[in-house]
Length: 412
Length: 203
Image 1 (spheres, rainbow over the protein chains, first blue to last red):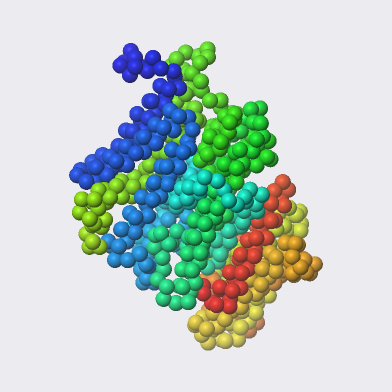
Image 2 (cartoon, one colour):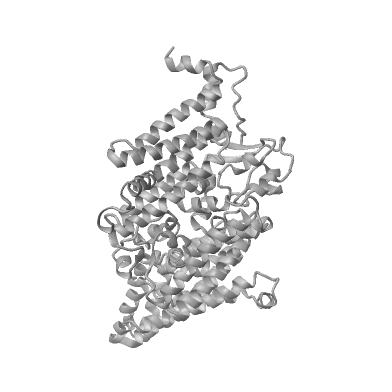
């Protein structure tokens, strides 16, 4: 018997499984954030790795994703914005994009643009989104790979564990103690509008070979980069970006405690909803335990829970698997579910660690239970995607404290 | 034969240019039987054929000047006219789905899917895409009738890419949901095509 096994024998299998998962996650976080670094970069990487590992430990041992998930998600989003803007200022001296820079493809590729780019790319072998790196394809294919991997694993969980834009809105919607405006009844309409916007940007993009969403609708231009307002069109686009950001990312989430931009506008989210069945993980409601109190309906930031979906035992496809409803449910009737092959639809019960099976089997069941496996997968995804910019922001903050400057190099 | 091959080889580009005009219409009819959807598609293609023959005759009448047809000017006018017409039809079709407003009720009462399909076909045929420009430059050497005939055959080649869409399976269970989503998408597309691309010319 190894030392680890001896140590684990004294604990329940589920606690031991959570502890083992935390250890693996901590190694993973170190590998992606700190391995091979030195000096200030190592300090920043270790800070972010430690933060992510602590978040996972709280989730794995506590058994519920929120509020730890939201803290991670919001922090990652807050880390993304200054890192991105600092890079822009350092490399070109400003946030604004000129027409010449767009024409020269000096625009980072964004996952939201996948939805508008993939159809022209498949049909015409043409990309409608300008992007930097060593060529358009070098930026498109890695993002396509991330997207396909997300579809096959966490599905729309991307929107609550990975997307650094959604993190801003998730954090803002979580700030008020209670909602001042109830939009619960609008759920079906908002979902339709979201799908219609996806159809609109894909079809309009096909017809014009222009990324229509990026040109006119993306609210996150305001916290990343935006087109130079040198014409009426430029000014109108800037007004649209500002209006949409303030309305859907700030004001409405504060009033409703719902993620309005993610629910209504984001075409990437709509795509994830439509292709959500490709993911083996989903959220399930135990209809035997559910007492129809409606607490999950009110808690869900995506309007994915309602009496109809509760009765079916499954939320709407707009569910982002954030787990906010788990904590709201007094009966503990909501949890993650793993659907694989012929076992599709089978509810995997939470592992108690008690029963007829031996300790080893119970430990393995606990490790592979969706309650542990989904947060591990989703947070790993989020941690890896955010590793570059978040660790860098930590380093920059340390630099700011030490030298009084957030920037490095030419932009300082 | 040359025209058919040109149409077939450039059909993906034509599909990308024309699909935004008829996909929303097909989605609205997603719950209808195959015969009705094929009829809608047929009328759309008829409208497109009318536009193509007109463009082919125009290119043929220009003769050696057909290259001028390609210069910035005429093609922009055709393009914007197509966007504006298609946008208006899509906008009206989308609004007709919302019967809780007086204007929408009036539009719903006058809604003719067959006429809309034909008009959208005409608009899509004016959408000057790269294969169409190539066809116009060849039709220039063929005279009015020859140009029209060339474009009719070019139409046959490009249509081969579109016909499979009318064979998509009927969606019974989700038909109402699909129709509602398609109506909203039609409004957005219609407003964008008409105002941004058609009137303002910001393509």
